[in-house]
Amino acid sequence: MDSLFDRLKKADPADAKRISADIRMEMSKSGSASMDLLLKRGREALEAGETDAAIEHFTALTDHAPDFAEGFHARSIAYARAELFGPAVADIERAISLRPRHFPAIYGLGAILEELGETDLAYEAYARVHSIHPHFEDVTTKLERLGNEVRGSEL
Image (cartoon, rainbow, N blue to C red; front, side, top):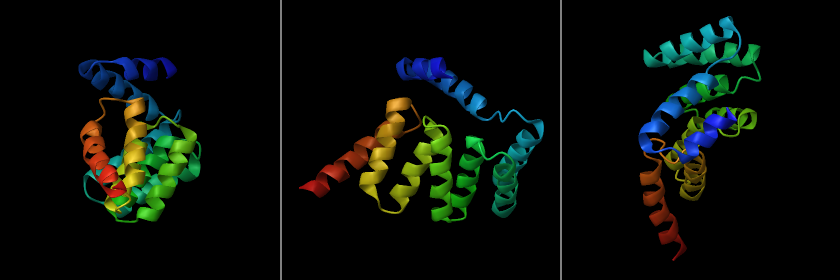
């Protein structure tokens, strides 16, 4: 994974998209077929708008695979969709503690902090994402917009 992250940091936008997909695929492998199935079922429930069912699948996953960062990241998404921001942030923190360069989780943290009006902290989260994956989604736009807000609040 280290070599993928090194390449991601230096890649042009087109290559970054492919490398990012490779990293996400690797981060989604738990090493257990049954845990991968729980992740798949949780994601399917989330896509179907069945947030409670998704949370149940992801909770079973995190209970049985407490060292699998993607399980916590996935459950954080479900919690955020249910507007349970405290548990969402707790799961993001767990995911990041297990995999410090988990840029989708860090981005999710930024989005939640932004939703909660914590502009300075959201900016820091997005800056961290940018340092790992400079071409991730709209992180540059978010940094520019929030940077203006952060600097404006300092005046």
